[in-house]
Length: 482
Image (cartoon, rainbow, N blue to C red; front, side, top):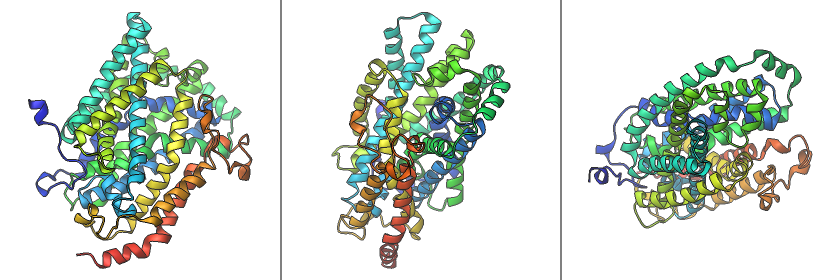
């Protein structure tokens, strides 16, 4: 009964004044827990393997990609504290109350995709540890990892905000301590001569640097923009905007940057580790650990990954309700959890490789999400007064039912962006149509093909286009604010 009473009933609605409280620094915990993930260590190896860049280029890609993408999250968080509503409700101001169904559906797909990826990784990592420590049957180890990982995610994601805030504080503290333990135990594995040789042998191309940076943008921060306001909406409206941005970016960026850099050092020092990362980016990290630390490693791997998956499951329920699901958020989250379970079973038991479908997912959905994120961030920046609460739910209000300018801009940014990305997953031949504009920059087999610059193109089209097309309309809306 206590668990049932702790289920959050807030959904797409505006948070009541009595429920608002806390300070901006409270945002540190959910964002840090969501991003203290050993997956970031695996990204270091992927940077070297997929883009053939030097160590210092990997550092630049990690710093620029992480800070820039979470900068978008920070700006979007301002909208939450200014309106006390979730992101996909506030997006109605830019797209119309009914027109927001398109970005809402895109966000829903992104959340479900990410929660599936993270739970699958936690399952695979658990399998690797259990097989090595207990010599447990391969499939039985997968089942155990699957039950533990999925169960924790569903528990937190369904119960909601208060449960998440409590869980994430503990997840962050435990995961940081154990992650520091991993770094301490594997620091001696760094071969500085090989790292120096890598820098000398791979000056790296500009295309490789850009590609790694875009991978960091899509794989670390961009997917969080559409849930940014879901957590800042509980803050009082007089909370300083700079503090909201600062604590969001600090909490979400600090650890991923450190882990990506350290993962790059480890992968540059071990060709075996770098080669194994494509199949199981987190589990591969056990190959350089002493046996006695494998159980703590499993704990940090699972907790780090589910910290992000919990936020995804929570926000996916809100996104589903925002596009017309006729039940409360926690019921929507249960439906999302079922889809997540099915997807996890496919990745863990049937997919021969993890990285190729993961990258295809990041890029294919990353382009329209980039276009939407840019439009939303531009909209937040241009608005000088708070949103009118009632009109966010009324198609006859000042935000209208359908904002055709924004919808067409989203479609245009997506179409142009998809023209400048390519798909490397041989099992996803249905995505071979992408890259139809690549001939303008060297073709699908040219040096710019793996860079997937279409993500940046979509961001530029969405941001600049919304400022040019909607500035006067927003000024007119706010002139009649009252």
